[in-house]
View 1 (cartoon, one colour):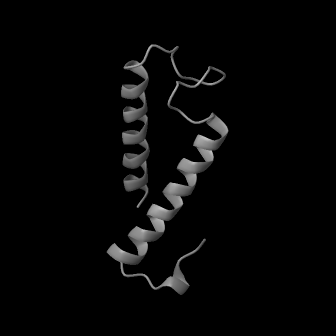
View 2 (view 1 turned 180 degrees about the vertical axis):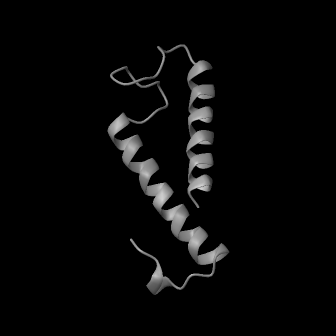
Length: 73
C-alpha cells in the first residue's frame, strides 16, 4: 500500500515538474510564486492530500474488498 502511495506522489511530482518547465514562470519551490495555472500552495497541498486519502479509501474498498465500516478516516 505504501509503495502505491509513493508511486502516486512521485508521478504527481514528475507531472508538476513537466508543467512547470513548459511555462515561462520561475522554478516552483518553497517560497516561490506558483505558475499561472497552479493553485496557491496551501490549497494545492490540502487538495492533493485529500485526493490521496480518497484514492486510498477507493483502493481499500474496490480493489481489496475491505468493508466501509473497517476503513479508517
